[in-house]
Length: 344
Image (cartoon, rainbow, N blue to C red; front, side):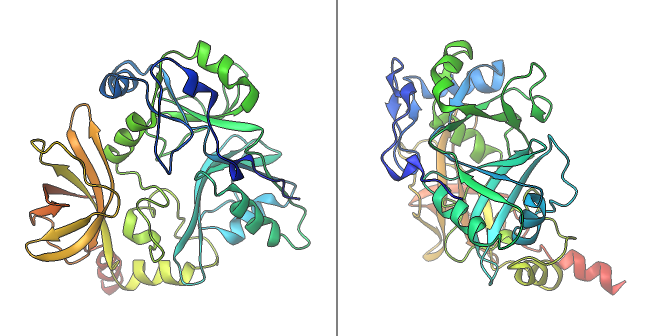
């Protein structure tokens, strides 16, 4: 059964009452963008590995029952058949044509797989899995109203924390830290003992610098996993069939993705950041759009953008008029190495 999500109503974290808290804009409305010192907050996370980031606006879905891993294996891009208790995983739900519909990250506790998803999407994610279980022994619940997610810059063993604390999840896309699933009612107590909070501006800057894509920002209605670097973290290329696999396999084995995600170093003399969806141009030609942008405490203004595959990797670009130098995330020749190996 699928419960009703509290995310259907406007959400405001209790930590917005913390001194200096400034609420973030969508898609991160409901939690703090920062607590008065955006760049020092980043430095504490990176250099001191101290504090935490409130991600309690994200959705939480739990899938329980003895057939849960089989269902996840059949419907997503990840190999869940061999997932052991305490092990984390990231996965995608694709359309029949291979376009990304949902991204999820979670951990199995031996009885259920706990996942967190983009803000407001938990009802749809839970509803999809619930509609596909048929006679399988699986129960799906949207627990956003009961559980919250926070991110810590400190790593730990996957699954249960060593001190018997909350369930934690880590992986290649967890920015060197871990995400905790907390009972929502304990969020204040956690914050009182976890050190100084940092806002999602800090988290997003670190995410962009780590080249980690985010659903709804680095994606649009026609994005395939090959374009944004998800083959490394959320797709298992050797598993059996799943919805959308034909497109992923064909592009990986026989072709090259039509677009590619790039990291951009922006001109630091400009006092604005390009917004999501802002045009990226090469000369007088529009070649893509900005997906995310932030001010990094060490790198300065940075961004990611989705551009045409055939844009030269050293081509000077403008992101909404701001000069930008590229750094490769997705190789424009991705796929050719597979064909070369098979031709030997």
